[in-house]
Length: 382
Image (cartoon, rainbow, N blue to C red):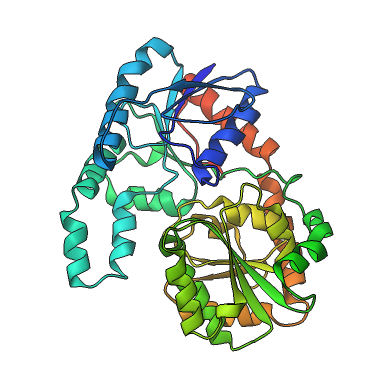
């Protein structure tokens, strides 16, 4: 079986990129030939052969248009059994909606904008192109299935587009439960000392690049609202405007309790140092960081606009609130500050995520692909 994957650009901390790496490593052991079409993909991944497709461009709109055209021209020569796109491209058999729907993202984004901001959003040609290409992708006669990383995404697609519901298949991302394991706490003392966090302090972890979309302002506001000087927030990720958020923390009186360490290729030490993960994302269809944190034994406080939050049990392994509900996030953090609460809920989170390890998810994906090749309609799976 040869599967061609399409992903335009590589980011070491990107969720879609980590999905591609995991899929290649897992499926490669099952006799699947995996080929990736991409503009750039530095380094090697076991089981993955990279074919570069990097047409010249100026500006992001030209970049996306040129890549889509270039990929569709290259595909016939690769003789793929299945073409799976991680970009909105209509010449694919399978589309992984890892970014959810652009239409829903714009709906959520408008919630934080004034009238003029909404007008600018509507007039942006890149949004118009993305919405057009998204619709072409979902309604393409070639499309056999859409992989949805959560039920949230499945329901959004069904709500916004006239697509056959049988094509919408929920397949959660897998997580390496051996690598992401509660034993990461073995180095907890050393890492916390390097960060300047005492043994008695509660450390909330925020992981994600693009702080506005990931909800960092709400996380900072919620931390400040707890009025607990023994709690701090560690921010792992990149954003060119990160100083803006540092100023917000200072204005709210928690500047010394919010630490920025930038993007990290290896988040494990920070999972081990933390007591809980906080992710009030405005829109995040299937964040891997929730799965990783749970596998490391951390409870999670996430927005209901995070697809992976579906795997949490309210009050048992975490809490789920609206992305803009500062008071709700404050109350959830306060619950986790209670003695023993974070450890108890973290153990429950680990138990809940174990069925989603790489071996189980690899078997589910293999079954999904073989069913497609055999002409069997996709089956709902999780």
